[in-house]
Length: 77
Image 1 (cartoon, one colour):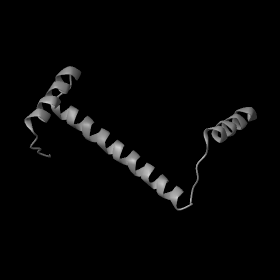
Image 2 (cartoon, one colour):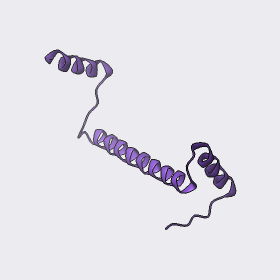
Image 3 (cartoon, one colour):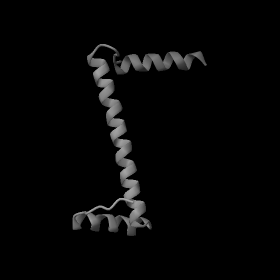
Image 4 (cartoon, helix red, strand yellow):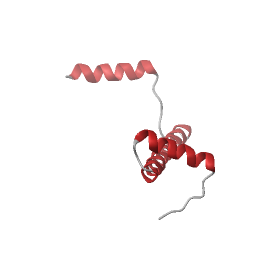
């Protein structure tokens, strides 16, 4: 169990969300924390991709190159 000392405005916002969604505050906080973890994971993947590109370990495609690649795959069946 984790105890949080939240600012009153944040606590009110959580309670408002809980009321509007029919969830309890524990469910709302769990959703918020899991969404944060997902966002952090996505940011970490993006940062790693940028570093790989900067180090020359990976590259990028223009939109035109991507479209050509997709069309080539589509034409294979």
